[in-house]
Each structure stands twice: as C-alpha cells, then as structure tokens.
Amino acid sequence: MQTSLQQALERLAQSDQPFVEMMKHGSMSVELYVPQKVDLQNPHQQDELYVVISGEGTFINGDTSTPFQAGDVLFVPAGVVHRFENFSDDFKVWVIFYGIQGGEKA
Image (cartoon, rainbow, N blue to C red; front, side, top):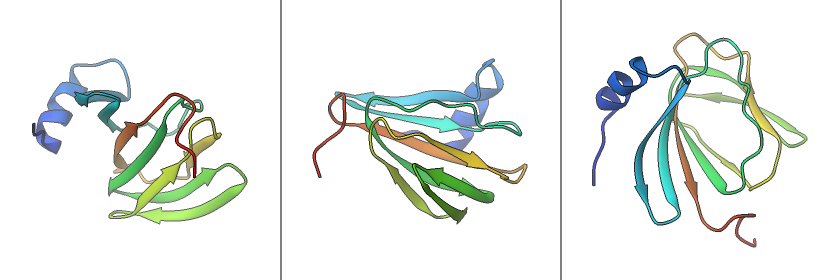
C-alpha cells in the first residue's frame, strides 16, 4: 500500500472538503489535511498523529500551545480538543488515525 503527496493533492482538488482519505487498513486511516485560514475540526474518537509536510504555526492540544513547522510530528489522544492556529498559507499535514474508539491506554 502506498500513496503520495501528489496523488493526495490531485484528489483534494476534486473535493469540497479540506481533507481526503488516502489509505485505510483495519483501524488505521491516513488523510491529507489542508485547512484554509481556519481549522474547524472537532475532537476525534481515535488517537491520531500529525506529520507536518509544509508550513508553520501554532498547535493547540488540550491546554498546551506549541509552535510547529515542517517535519514535526504531533500526537493527540482520542477525545482531546485540538486545532492549528496562525498557520502559514502553505500548511499541509498528513493525519494518521489509529486504534480503538476512545483511544489506547497510556
């Protein structure tokens, strides 16, 4: 199983959503997420990883606010309020959802 950024961008261009699912296996799914100006996402029922492809900004993860840039990997436990803020126009991120509903135990 393989995907590429180019394939994801082509599919995203045909979508009316800021994300497109590119891969799924069992509980794992991989999406490309490219929000425009505002990140409107809600908490998810699975744990997730973000792999920042390009851009920079601030990531809100629960009560924590941290700067991010291309190449960073960010983790969010299931159910935690999170969002990207003040991100650059070139911001793109892979999102990997995995595990059981409600998240894995630490």
